[in-house]
Image 1 (cartoon, rainbow, N blue to C red):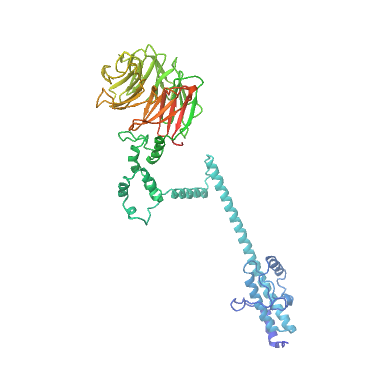
Image 2 (cartoon, rainbow, N blue to C red; image 1 turned 135 degrees about the vertical axis):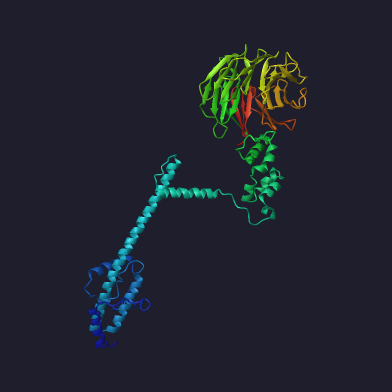
Amino acid sequence: MVSPPPEGAAAAARARLRDGPASRPLMNNQGRSGPPGNGRPGEGEGGEAKKQQEGRVARGKRRKGKGKAGAGQGGRGSGAEGKPGPQKAKEAAGLGTEAGARAGSGEEGERGGSEGEGARRTIKGDEGSAGAGKEAKGREDGQKGERRVRTGRREDRRQRREQGRGGHAWGGNARTVAAMAAAAEEEAAAWEPPARPASGPALWRLPEELLLLVCSYLDMRALGRLAQVCRWLRRFTSCDLLWRRIARASLNSGFTRLGTDLMAGVPVKERVKVSQNWRLGRCREGILLKWRCSQMPWMQLEGDSLYISQANFILAYQFRPDGASLSRRPLGVFAGHDEDVCHFVLANSHIISAGGDGKIGVHKIHSTFTVKYSAHEQEVNCVDCKGGIIVSGSRDRTAKVWPFASGRLGQCLHTIQTEDRVWSIAISPLLSSFVTGTACCGHFSPLRIWDLNSGQLMTHLGSDFPPGAGVLDVMYETPSTLLSCGYDTYVRYWDLRTSVRKCVMEWEEPHDSTLYCLQTDGNHLLATGSSYYGVVRLWDRRQRACLHAFPLTSTPLSSPVYCLRFTTKHLYAALSYNLHVLDFQNP
C-alpha cells in the first residue's frame, strides 16, 4: 500500500494549478506511458485510430476551460492528429505519471492530479486542433495540386491529339509548349549517332580517314558483316564513299558509266541493296492500268508523274509514294490529234507528240496551251526534241527538222529524203547531228547520221544488214555511243570513235523475236521488250547471255512490249491491253 504524500506536495500542486499550466516537457525526459486500462492519472494510450483522435479533439474543444476530468481519462487524448499523435500522447502520459506520483492515493492528490492533467489536456487539445487544421489545409492543397497536374496532363494529351489530326491548336499554353520542346529534344537525342567504342581492337582507334581507306578494299559481303558488329560500325559502314565503288559495278544503281550520280538524294547503300534484286531477278509483278481495246501505247516518265498515250489522247498520272501504283484519276488529258498518238517526248515543260494523222502537236503541261500543225503526208512514226529543235520521221520516207520556238512553230527547216520508212529518230546530246532508223528496204543501212544544221548525210552505220532489218528504236547514250534494236532480233552497241562499219557489241534475242524497244541505265543494265508474249528481258552488258526474262502475258493475249521505262526501283512496260509494273524494291 502506498503511503499518502505529505501535505506540502498537495499544496504545491494546487499552487501550480492556480499559476497556470506547466511548460511542455522535453521528449528525451518523458516519453513513456504506463500500462493502459488501470484508470490512473498517469496512464496514456498512443497510436489510436484516426477517428478516435478526431473525437478527442472535438471533446477537448468542448471541455476547454473546465479543468476537471475523470481520473480514468486523465492520460487520454493527445489532441493531435496524423503522425505527431503518438509522440504527444507519450508526452501527456509522462506528465500524468509525474502528477500521480506526487498526489498518491489521497483525495487532495487525486483531485490535484486530475485538475492539473485536465488543464494540460485542454492546452494539448488546442495545439492538436491547430495541428489538425494545418494538416487538413495541407491535404487540401495537395489534392488541388494533384487536380492541377491531372488537368495539365489531359490538356497535353488533347493538344497532341489535335496536332496528330492536323490541327494547329497550341493555345498559348506555356506548359504544353515546354513539354513538346522537351519531347523534341528527347527525339533528337535518340537519333544522335552512337559514339565510337572505347575498347576494342586497335584498328577502331584509327582516324576515320584511315578507316575509310582500309574499308574501301572490302567487298559488299564484308561490309555487311562489319555493320553487324556494333552500332558505331553500322553507322560508319553506311557512308556513301564506301559504297560508291560497289554501286558503280552494280546494275541500275543510279550511276552512269562516266560516274555521274543520277540519284544523289538516295543513300548509295540502299541503292546497292535494291540492285541485288535486279541482278537476281527478284520482283513483284502488278498491273497499273487496263484498256478495253487494243492499243499501241507510248510512255514517258518525269519525276513522280507518268505520261502514257491511249488512242488519240495523252494522259498524265501521278505515282503514289510506293511507286508501284498510280492515282485513280489522271492529272491531265492532252488531246489534239485526229488519229492515234504514235510517239511523244517531253521537253521544257511541253509534250511534243506525233500522230497517225500526219501532224505534230505541242502541248504545254501546266496549261491548256496546244498547237498542232501538219508535218508529213502520212503518219508520223517518231519525234524527238532537244535544244530548241524538233526532228520527225514519217512513213512517207522523209525526215524533217523544225524549230521549237513560239513564233516559228510549223516552219520546216530541212526536209531529208531517206528512201525508206522512218521508224525511229534521236538527236545527239551535242545538238550537232541526229540519227534515223529506217525499214532497211530501199537502202543497205538502216542507221544513218545527218547533220542537224545542213541536213546533209554524215555517215551510215554497219554494212551487213539483211533486207528488212528495220530499226524500231534507237537512242544516244553519250555523244559518241548509241544503242539500236529492231526486226533483226539484235541489240547493237555502236561507238563512233572506233568504227562506223561494225558495232562494238551485240546481244541476240534468244527466241528470235522482234525487239520493239530498249532502255538502259547508262551503265551496265539493258532492258528490251519483245514482240511475243510481252517478254521483258534484262541484260548485263558485261555478258553475252540474257540475265532474266519476264513474260507478262499468256498465250491468248500475246502482245508486244511497245514501250518500257524503269527507275532504280521499278520497271514499267506498256502492252496492248495493260500497263505492267515490276517492283524490285519490295519483291
